[in-house]
Amino acid sequence: MNNTPLLQISDLHKAYVLDGVTIQALRGIDLMVEHGEFVAIMGPSGSGKSTLMHILGCLDIPDAGSYQLRGQDVTRMNSNQLAALRNREIGFVFQNFNLLPRTSALENVETPLIYAGVGKTERRQRAREALARMGLAERLYHLPNQLSGGQAQRVAIARALVTQPSLLLADEPTGNVDTITSADIMNLLDELNRNDGLTILLITHEQEVADRAQRRLSLRDGQLEAQA
Image (tube, rainbow, N blue to C red; front, side, top):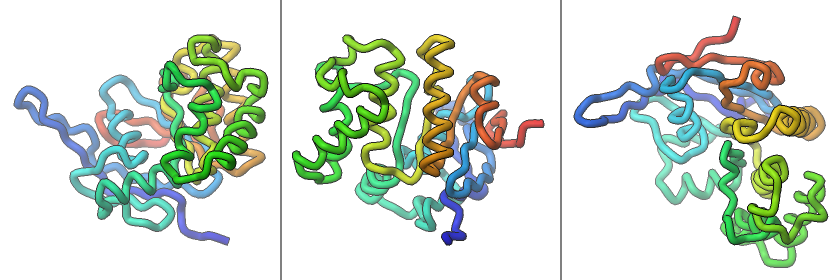
């Protein structure tokens, strides 16, 4: 049994300078996420959600504080180490899908495995299996513009899962789909968390989406607090 939290950040700070003005995006954030948790973070525009997501996803580093992912001190890593950790441990799902536009669903899902050095035969098989699990076995060779919004997001989820990550970061995953498709995507995330034990950290501005998580936090003015 692993008693180390999957993710732990302590006294995290991040500031930006914009037009000569210093903006404090994160002000002493503390957060611990255990293996298998489903956590939602809400907050208004400008609250620091994107900054926090970028740091948690090893796309940016804090100015101060500590971040440990599976017991590894992320803040001490160089860019190559961060890239390797990101590709191995973290899956991303974005509001705008971020699919390669001239690339089939199958090739989109294969992409992280190419960077991981997985051979062509194995990565093709794993990508097929990931898409089949998303209900897209008949859409392998469709381009993103030939897919509905819900199908495109399922391709994005398949791509996020194909490397078998420890953590799924979902940034407004229902922001570009209709209400019915939103419910389908949340049902899928619920299933991945409940049946696979996948740890999910989701950022959303929709209360009904956040309510699907086991734990809900609010981010305001760069500080986290539990929802009442």
